Length: 139
Image (tube, rainbow, N blue to C red; front, side, top):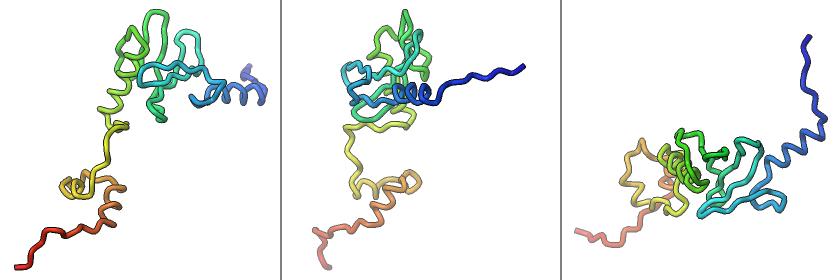
């Protein structure tokens, strides 16, 4: 005999609402650590937290009784901030995140990049770019 898990539709919606609360929601359980916000998602051991840097969710970290982890680098961290920084460093290195403090390339800098390295947005910016000829002298 096969039994299935039955859950009232309203119970499921309530649990999803709690999981998906943004860090700005007054009902969200938020921990502020230097440079990051941790939003509790659920779980007992481990407790699961979504990690936000500025307004961007960068991933999930886990709080165990004896340590923290971030599930991307398989390292055990003593502090939540270390797990969050490790996650951020890994995602930045993997090219999944860009630093929020970086300025976008200027059109002149984009012209110096290899064309295979340009993103579609950068191509679009270059397509619309009209260089200013300030220092040209007629010969």
